[in-house]
Length: 575
Ligand SMILES: [Zn+2]
Image 1 (spheres, rainbow, N blue to C red):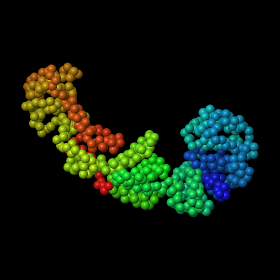
Image 2 (image 1 turned 180 degrees about the vertical axis):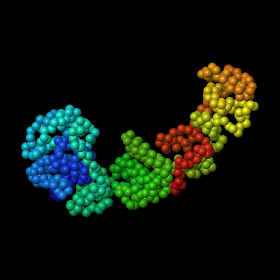
Image 3 (image 1 turned 90 degrees about the horizontal axis):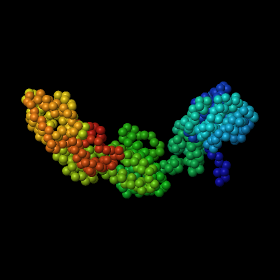
Image 4 (image 1 turned 90 degrees about the vertical axis):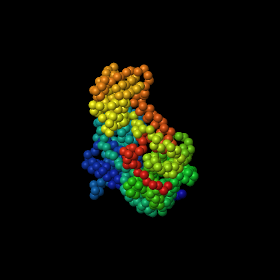
């Protein structure tokens, strides 16, 4: 207990006291050191960067470097405040009358700034400069910023403002333009590991490199967080820190269980998967965290499968990684993609619903169930081949009749594909354009209008003509109301020119057949309805989020089949 009393947290104990000790901020260190030693001093500094990178620390070093009574320069021309004079000591404990620290988060109003401005005109009591450190400056109100701006425009020579912010975008540009700005970077992992390692050495702590890397990883570039995690590890392990305990501390020890959970998911072991998931949940791990971990694994395997490279990930222990490589050999990319999408959707649902355990359970069940189904590519392929029984590939029972050829009434039912359907057929002697051409149906007539570039005729024939009867030389028809008045005479002269005979075209009151366009639309509708209730298709629609039926093609169309073959990779699966 006594040891705890005198224990100073590492972040405070090792807080840098000069530019040289600032970790990982080389550019800033050099620029500031030079500027101050050459007396090229801005009256306002703006320090920006994420929390924990050392903004406040830097501000204090600047204050010390400006006011230290015995400042020296080292060989690398870094400024070194003595840290021993009255100025240095009082700044260090926040007790210097000329260095005023203000937390803008709790002093947002204009009155606080007015108070500062009132005092700006008084000279420093015992130092070279009067230094105002304003932390979280973006929190100031607009009025406060405006008041501050007036002072920044004409600062007295003895005044220095050092402002720090995590959100530079919220600082007015008028203020920014009067400051020398420094961006404090996140500390790179290498620098962090070295820093933690140096401190561990000084503290006589034994800690392996991998443990240091794990801590550096978790600190996400913040020195303060890194040191606080090292503090925790010391409190947890004493001066002999083991990798296992660090993993435990960082919540990474459940990784193998998550890998096992993933394995059960793809094998379709519902009960085992649920057991592990529940256990993790009971341990207090949020279900959304478990899903994210599963996504992490899914991403790792996918990347490995595509590139063949083992992505360096120190949060994975060696045995976990070996397991993942083994899994990757037995699962297709299509299935990985499907699992990813289900997890993504699950995570989204989890954030919307209050009862996360229920939706988490359902997600686990859904994924394990889906693992019994063939992946989308396999389904498409088996429909296309038409011979294999889908039920043999997966475990879905499907009425095979649905895939019989005779059911596929049209080659192509996409409504926009009228052009293809009525392409002139050169092999058909009936429509060959000659003096003695015989025309006895609407389709042939449409093809001929296209051949002759009679597009107005063609479009009216497609959309507006209900045929009552059609034979060579004689047509009885009903027209839609919006048909142009000259349509009959246009059609009549077109036919006469083509065939050399006068055609008898009569308008009928009978209903007649559907127009060609109506027929195509109806066929497409029937096809779509049939497709929509198809169990395979509805399964695909459900299991691939965002999927929809756009066009319907018959699968023995070789061009389309080839395209589908190219866009899917089908891998035989063991699981
Ligand atoms: Zn000093």
